[in-house]
Length: 98
Image (cartoon, rainbow, N blue to C red):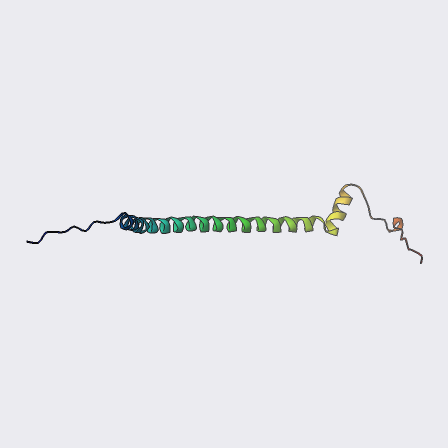
């Protein structure tokens, strides 16, 4: 008769198998978590890009409005509304002697 001999597992082998099992469980979880985080960050980046484009369009329209209001014809129009007139005789040229 042969006796069934059970091989005892040492503490070191038990520790190695526990670490391997933990790695097998934690690896897929960490991959899924990192992919989810990356997707969230990409979504936020796209949202910010849209906001930047919207703000750039607003800035462009404001710049065009400023240019329009600063044009010579607009200035003359506002001056006439305020009772001012263009008088070429009142313009004096100053020259610098060298």
